[in-house]
Length: 414
Image (cartoon, rainbow, N blue to C red; front, side, top):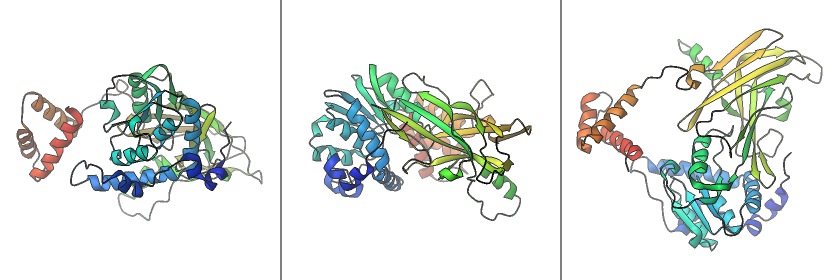
């Protein structure tokens, strides 16, 4: 199914083939200085984390070559392009090389000097439009021909991918415009790979800690030999048709294969990975047998490993709910022959409004009250005073209240 990639050719001459591939550290100097900081106290560490992450992305040859080849086939001369979550700007640069007349790079991170330096060095400075905001706050004067985004998590839909991508498609893309990726498929298979071992824990919290470990979706490295059955398609997301608010859910019937000796298999959980159709026949896969990427596989653990006979069926069900930048999962596994059913994750947390009664948290009530007072004309200092009087234990200093009000206004006020 997957389009082959000439990894050896890339290794022998990536700069000759692809032009300048930025080194984030070098590009700070090439771009002419450090990026703007969000605030004095936290932006420096955030920036280091972001640049470290994007260094890993640029070093991921499988990922970068797949996107480059797809962009060369999807982007046409004269196209206008949105590079959503642009980061280092490498995808937009590939679009320029393919003939794009304009790339609108949208990213709220501190990458503007880096990206401007990258485009200038490659002769495309006049084609870049940089917007340093959250894309949900962006409005474009004109719609574009192509929407590019690599905001895929280990199981594709983390990193708020659906929220940002579907919103951008609805508001930024011309009717009939082209998307990258076009579709995402989620696969699962039974595995002997187990969750990370819990450090030696004693005391009243030991049991709760163990339960929490089994109710967490883990990013793991799954070897092909650790799979205990054929992979099954759990869900396919057509990103050209999915609507905002789409939630990921699926069910798959998994059959346990016999090991080399024909013995029962010890199933510790269900492994998952994704394939993404990037366009022009290029498919990016994070399956265990594919070339390694910066992505890992995911593991949905069972409460404890189960010994299952060859030919046994496991009915695996999964549902997820997007909460800001995180996806909360709940899952279950049923073995019809044995009559056993295991529930994992927190089903209540993955129910939509209307399926259960929701209430504001204390932080939500506080945010609502701050917004109400601001709407009635309260000043910044008055909002700070309100917090200090309302919760002096939590806001032990004016500085803490200042940070809270600043964060609220950044999110909610233009």
